[in-house]
Length: 306
Image 1 (cartoon, rainbow, N blue to C red):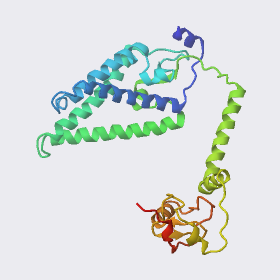
Image 2: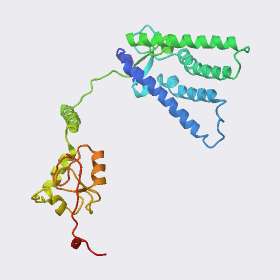
Image 3: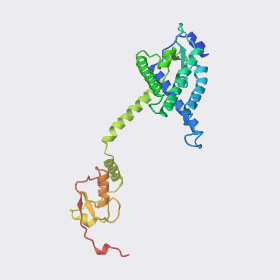
């Protein structure tokens, strides 16, 4: 059914980003399949698959090729992006699927090329450089370098004209096209306006929050719901009337004041000030001016016997 639709319409070009996304999806799928396969041998002896790892990977990629490119003319990533391969060597402008030779050579260039690279590296790394394999190793290394350089040049050309994202596609004459004619997506303006309004409000909050002194705001709210203490008549009233720390509520240990009429334990006020340089008194909202010790005049009648 899809081929009939494509035969009745002209071929629409595929965006560059869509082709690159399809390649990344293919790589992610291959990594996922290989990780799931290796999990099956998790309980076996370590390094069991190391010797035949290139061959096992090739078998898995052949299995994927059989049910993707061979049967559907598209990889898994292209299927998710609604893309498939087209025989670009045909002279007609209508859609033409890949022939059997193109599919076979696609398998050889992708799966066979990666298997040869991995197996050659494993083979040559186990022999000394001065052995008979040295010349073959140099030839294989030069060939691999030239192929990678050609792939880079092909990618630069792809960025220019948007055709043939990989060197294999260019050599085989296969091109990515949409599976069906692209239609304009209908989106309600009410939904778009709501999304734009919400994103604008969220960005405004992100910009505004660092400018708000949250500690002072909490202190002001706390002071609104808690009855205010009457001001002391003079500065000496601090040592007379303050019998508990304004933070922990216990008898002040090494009592200190921050410039207001309330008293704090030295370790309480010092730790809070080190944690928050904008620390304010939780009872009156006064900021830290100077940390001064306070001397208490203890009345023995206030001490309760044990």
